[in-house]
Image (cartoon, rainbow, N blue to C red; front, side):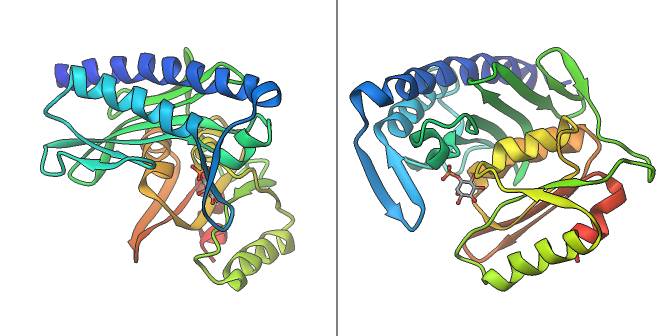
Length: 254
Ligand code: LIP
């Protein structure tokens, strides 16, 4: 294993936890102090917590890996021609965060030639670190993760994401097809955490038909190491993502 990658993985795991603590501190102060919130678009918000958490991550990565590229949801791209790029969502599930709900996380991925080789997702509300380094397995804290490979899986629960950038009919058709096959769904509003929960066996699958790189790259690395079926395609302006236990991959795809 490339020692540099191993060092980046270890660093990213610690960095995600430190960044998560910063964001969680903001959330805990929300009720007393409030937060300045900007509206980026329909159901798309950003607060000083997002910006400060991303600034911290970006500064630490720039200090320790100045030659690496960076793509952050709030601050954009730097060093785009570097060999590897850190792809970061400082708070994935921003709407939940701002409404003092727990379904949000810090997502950090290291991507080489368009493929995530390190994925780290930290949920500060539950102190859960989901992580993977290519070839080294997927982990939840110190527990190895692997999704159910059989066709005897107790299949029943899928996490769906929705973006208004895609026709509502697509989302409704997926929901209907699943329900017609007796499969329930939830919609938590954090793609990164939803993907991590598939790797942990809490959902049988995740699908979202338009999503950004910073929402999915860490989850893809983790799910591939957890032996899930992962399909992600670049589309105009973003990606489409699907990940599941093998038993329902075709049904989820439709
Ligand atoms: C969110 C995604 C979610 C999607 C939301 C939003 P954010 O990311 O994780 O899956 O449906 O529209 O993009 O904005 O909370 O970082």
